[in-house]
Length: 205
Image (spheres, helix red, strand yellow):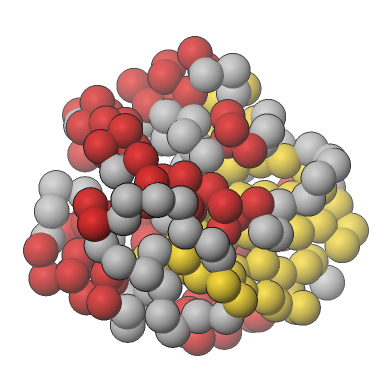
């Protein structure tokens, strides 16, 4: 999206400004991230997740974001989640962190994710829960990025993921306070409903 291309520096700076919230989100993703295998991040942005998590390949629609991700060692390419430039059954896992609320066709992105996953491949999605305190805050605030977002709650997104060929769901939650109020790395908890950031993990069937 043009908004991310234009404000790429503002986007990247958020992670330094809210260091402990960012590190907490990483901990939640690590709970479900495979220790081995080839991974893809859709909406890789500036590589803030892919680089520290060891996700080697990324795709994003912002040229300016991609340049930063590449400097962080990620094989980041220009493209869209609805039309992935990869062969079928190419990856052991696909991560979509925050990105899904910004894409034009979430269902198509999920179908493409399934296509490029190997048999029993894992789908890892991170969202700001629409029904939680943080999701409600961002929807009301309408900041430069989230004013363009179409937020999900966990149950409706789970239903959507199921329709695209995934099962065996598990959930982890983090961010139990506003990002600027978090002063140490939080511990992820199973489930959802309390944490503002939720990681959904499912397996390709």
